[in-house]
Length: 67
Image 1 (spheres, rainbow, N blue to C red):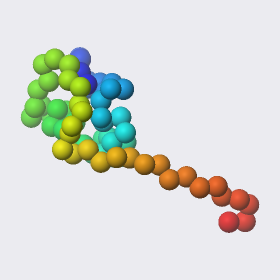
Image 2 (image 1 turned 90 degrees about the horizontal axis):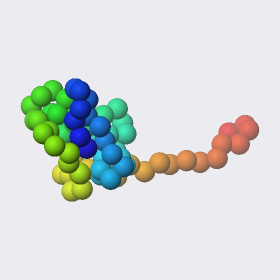
Image 3 (image 1 turned 180 degrees about the vertical axis):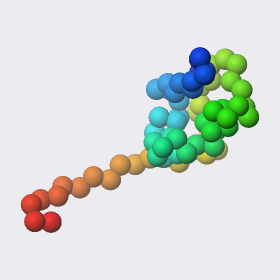
Image 4 (image 1 turned 90 degrees about the vertical axis):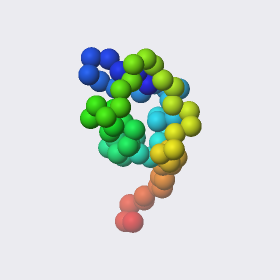
């Protein structure tokens, strides 16, 4: 994760990539605090053990005609 020109960028190494809070409309308290300026990110950071983390799992099923 890093901050550049007023934007927060999430990298593939960050735990955020498969977090339920991040995938559901950026409802993450950490990202909200960074976006509102309550917390500042001066350098890059790799998020590995976040207390807000919830694993996002996708549930897919096949829907046939008539179902």
